[in-house]
Image (cartoon, rainbow, N blue to C red; front, top):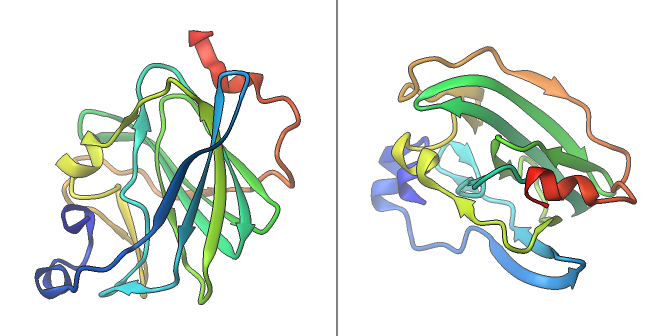
Length: 180
C-alpha cells in the first residue's frame, strides 16, 4: 500500500496497519462471486483510508453495495498514463454502484465509522493492480484538504460526480460483459 499513498512522508514511518479486510467468495451463484470488504475508519497521514485499487482483465463489470457506513468510489478509465475519464460516487448504506467495463477503481472510507461493502463480479475475473502501482495511486487522492491530483499522470480531467443506484440491480447478467 505504501506505493499508492499520497502522504509519502507518513508512509516512511507508518506502522504496519491492517487497512482493510477482504472476504472473497462469501457466496457463489451462476458463475458470479460475492466478496465482502470491511474498511475501518482511519487516516493514512493526510489521506483517508482506501483500498489499493484495481481494474479487471478483459471486459468485465462489477457492482458494489454499501452494507454499513459511507463510501466514496473513484473510477478512472485510462490509456497508458493518460486518464480518459474520471468520476466519483458517494454512496451510503443500501446504495449500489456499477463499475463499468474498462474502468479501474478504489474505495475510500471518508467517514468516522467503519465501512462494510459487498461486490459481485464474474468468478473467473482477474483483478489487475498494475496501473495503481506504476502511477503510485489513482489519478486523485482524497485528503483532509479534499481531492488532490496525482502528478504522476500526464493528463487528468476535472473530477465529476455521479449518483449511486438506490439498490442492487435484480438482474446481474450485465456483469458477464462480452465474455459470456
